[in-house]
Image 1 (spheres, rainbow, N blue to C red):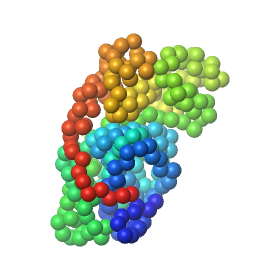
Image 2 (tube, rainbow, N blue to C red):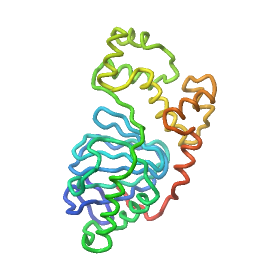
Image 3 (tube, rainbow, N blue to C red):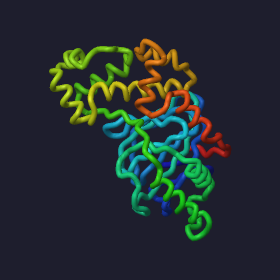
Image 4 (cartoon, rainbow, N blue to C red):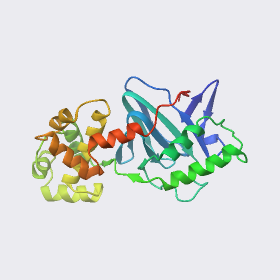
Amino acid sequence: MKVQIPRRNIDIDQVPRPLFAVQSSTIAQDWEVEPHRHQKAQLIYTVRGMIRCEVENGLWLVPPQCALWMPGNVLHNAQGAGSTEAYCLFVDQHVVAGLPQSCCTLSVSPLLRELLLQATTFEPLYDEQGAEGRLTAVLLDQLVAAPIENLHLPVSDDARIRQLTEGMLSCPADKSTLGQWAQRIGMSERSLSRTLQQQMGMSFGHWRRQLHVMLALQRLTQGESVQTVALDLGYESASGFVTMFRKAVGKPPARYLAERNAAGQSPGGAISM
């Protein structure tokens, strides 16, 4: 993957530095980046809007003030809905111990955020022995220490599980039981339950709740009301949806999004990528 900066193109895998950061331009319409991979690990940090990435056998959402970490050589794509603004950090994962070895969503602290924003101002061949090199070392330490958030929806290459996934994505309010879904996709209830545990690492009920959280975040960040989202996802009331959301992420949706929107302000000086 090549990242375009003013007046030149740079192959990120050929930048001989521990990290290389860029800010994307603000995009006011839906967009998609085709599946690709690169040797360096990547952090996608969302300032505004929601970014959705499919990475190998998982679906990830990156809400405001969160970041998706992907190790190097992982096939992935990215999609944005509506107005989005994000930063990308490309990291040589061999330069520091303790970086995540698998894909995960990270919570970005104010310090990590400011370090990341500052890194986007560095020239590609910044002085590793100077102030920029020292800030880079602190940034990497903060990246290692960043807490993981559970915004992951496992998916599967199994055609029948894919059929289940697409069916539930197309109609998330469908309250069909495990047995009813099993019959639709040509499996026994016991076999479907066992397959979900083996391939997804969670029960059918847990998987469906996780799907609802991710779909809700995608819509809430676009300004839809909790009441509308709750009803569209099949909940009898907003309170029932809020209870589910709080159990899943530890906070009600309004507080969860308010904290992220208040965590930082959108800086200027965008670099297109």
